[in-house]
Length: 273
Picture: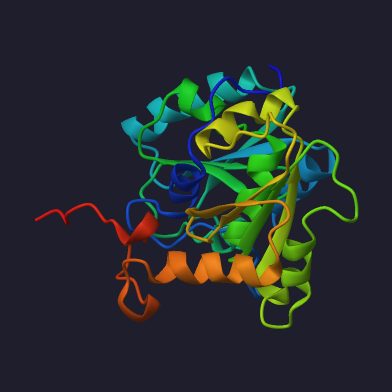
């Protein structure tokens, strides 16, 4: 299996799949403070990252028919992806697995659950209860997608630089933003070469066209929502203005209701009744 993939879902959908498992505790690759000792699954996660591979984790609780059925799908699919991924099964009731269960917050998630973790620690897919081989394969995403997901799962604002040759002078306004003490700790720069074939589906999902050779800056929130697409030469103040406008366009005082997405130009679709 090649590292490229023919189709990448939108970044928002990927983030929601990785972080919202039917209303359960959010899944995150960020380790929390814990007194639970590391177990075999933690070693598998470390080894996969060391080897530049994904780790597919099959979490299960009860050895019922659904668990056995999905385990067969999981084993067959991951057995065909050994060039890019390792796999491990984890019984969440086994105390030796307590560390990884806590790390990804899956103790109350619907079981069985397949989780895909990229080499950089980003969760690229979370599939509870029922899934198929194609869904597992789609969890292997481009490096740019994984880098954006990791930053957002670390609750950072992503500044995505899309340009073939990025030198020290490129995207100076965005670089200035990351040096501002108000934003330094909450922003992350990700670079993508628009000529990289493996990134084409991702860029298309973000509706980015860098074919003219001009750099494009895409800003994304930790919720996985692209909020602004800006020219490379935008200043720090111009970027801040765009972000402010996006955050307040349909949210009074910039405070959106849970799950609400702000709308371009303040034109929101009618709320569903």
